[in-house]
Length: 85
Image: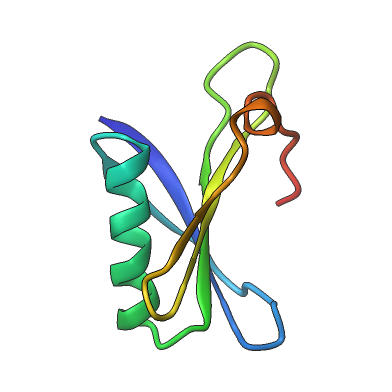
């Protein structure tokens, strides 16, 4: 299982904390993000996979809004996307 980082965000876009959880794959992580959004009453959740390779870069998976709609990041920019957190 891969560990993903979930950043619940407030209406102003600020994420004050993160949650680390394991998921089977990216799709499973996006489903978990929807559950986190509902449980924490936030407007959305950003999903990242922490750096696993020697390049030291995190991979942005996507974002889920409070109503469970997911927006996956484009694959060509997701791979090796630099961490902004």
